[in-house]
Length: 319
Image (cartoon, rainbow, N blue to C red; front, side, top):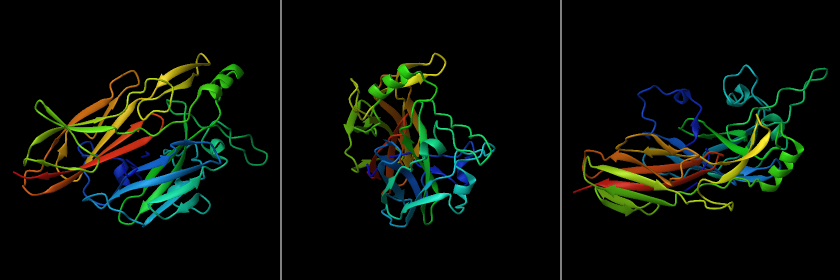
C-alpha cells in the first residue's frame, strides 16, 4: 500500500455523521482515504512516520499540500467528540505542527499519557488532578491529530500510545511489561477476484478487465499469526481484565473498508471478530454499466490496536 491508520481517515466535516443511505465506500472527489503510522504504537518521546493516502477522486494522487498536526489539548468532559474543539478550530497552542508533505515524522508528545492516557492530568493551582482517560476495548490509548489537504475535508488520525497499565496489581504490571509487544501494522497479503468457481490473484496496483455491469467477488486476506512473534495478521496480546484485575490473552479483531471511485460495493465494511480464526473477508463489487471506463479500488485493513494496511487495484470495463 501507499500507507495505514487510521487509521480510512475520519472526516471532521459534517460528513462524519452520514445519513443512513449514504454509500461510504463511494469516492467521488478529493479525499484523504487513510493515514498510516509506522510504527502504529509508540511510547511518549518516540518518533513515528505518518503517511497519507490521498485521492483526487479518480486515483491515488500525490500531493504536497498536506498539513499535519498533533492535538495537544484534551477534550473537556462535556465535549461530545474525542478531539477537543480547540484542536478542531485551530486555537492557539492546541496543535503541534508536524510538517506539510505526504509523509512526515513526528515525536509522540512526552505528556501524551497524561493528556490522553491513564495518567491523571495536572489540575490548576489549588484544584485536584483531572480524570484519567478511559482505554478503548483493547486497553489502548491514542494520541490524536489532524491532517489537512486543499480541496478535501480535514481528517482525524490517531497514533496508539504505549502507556502504563492502570488499575493493575504490581504482579500484573510486571507480567504485562514482560509479555506485551507493541503493535505491528497489518498486511493485506493477498487480493483475489472470484468469478464463479475461478479465483485469480491480483498484484498490488494491477489492472483487471471486467464486463460492464459484471458482479465480482473481491477477497482480501492477511497472514495467519501462529505464535507471539510480530505478524501482519491478527496478533495476540495481553490485556487487563479490569474486574478480575488479572491479565488475559486476547487476539486482534480485523476490519476491512472497501472504497471505489466507480461501480458499487455491496458493503463499505467487512470484518472478523477476535475469536474468528479466518484470515480473509469477501464482498462484491458491481462494475460500471458503461464500456471503456476505469475505476480505482482500495482495500484498507485495520486491526483492533490501531494498525493499518492498504492494497489497491484498478478495473477497466471492456468486452
